[in-house]
Length: 392
Ligand SMILES: NC(=O)c1ccc[n+]([C@@H]2O[C@H](COP(=O)([O-])OP(=O)(O)OC[C@H]3O[C@@H](n4cnc5c(N)ncnc54)[C@H](O)[C@@H]3O)[C@@H](O)[C@H]2O)c1
Image 1: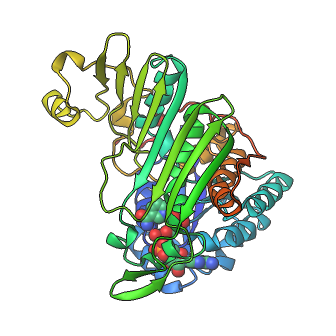
Image 2 (image 1 turned 120 degrees about the vertical axis):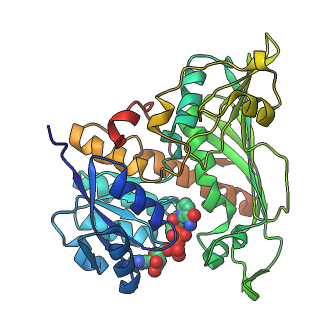
């Protein structure tokens, strides 16, 4: 039987739109990208041509198109909330790039409009739906490291001006390492370990100006965060997010349990090997998520052959390769509409993540422990990899 496809409209045709358009036009069976829009029409025209879309248009025209059910908002963070509201009010389900909003009040306003209208609202990242983090989830639920007690989450680097073609917005309101990179880490932690209870943080703006392509740009946000978090389960850990660190050997994400340690793959990626340390046997176990040859895995992770184990993956690795699979969350959302089930990414999760991300700033500014107002469920484990993925 022919699979029904949900009509998608993309708003924001910048840097990240390429990977979304690549994946959503080629890799998922249940969606069809029918239109794209940008505040600069020529950028929309360019993506329409490149990806063979039916239509490039203004935001207003896109929102008036009755064939589109989901709007994918790929504008810059400062524009997310207004575009989300506009789309929801036009009756569209919304998938927004991260973060959903720049403060909890805006996230709540959008979630309320979505609820009133019976629409799905959610935001990236969708990396936790990939084979890497889903395998972590499965192993945690199976008790592979016992009861989780603590974690460390670290994204420290020299700043996005090292690679992004137009990086100014990372240093303006809505930017900074916490709102930009924090969503990957906080969403992964919440999806793996449940909701956050309270947190505390110190944050600094180390340089008032940054040199970007030879020009000095004023920095409006903190660029170095040192945070501590307690989850509702009682688990505690630290979160370091920085654009001020030249080089580091800190792990990206590790979870410490009563029986062992889990080295979680990069939460900004969809795959990657999961490494476990079994405290009782005193040995390290590496999953072969990517089909990397054994000798390379041993070299990469510094372990002996007897420590490599076949760990059953959450779903077949070939269904979701390590490559950049952005748009997976849109496909899951489309499937939720088709199956009349709830979407794994949803407004409750996105609101909770926005509250936590902005709470690091509030705690630092007001010199206090921030107690979370919102909570959420852990999203259901992923099992749709094969069904959504276009295998041929
Ligand atoms: N670049 C990346 O690698 C990357 C990775 C993951 C997530 N993201 C997220 O994706 C989003 C976009 O990032 P980007 O790097 O593509 O930025 P970008 O500046 O390259 O592109 C943003 C696009 O949105 C358009 N736009 C801005 N405001 C608009 C509005 N009100 N209405 C219509 N169009 C508008 C701009 O004209 C531009 O074409 C951000 O939320 C970012 O955090 C980016």
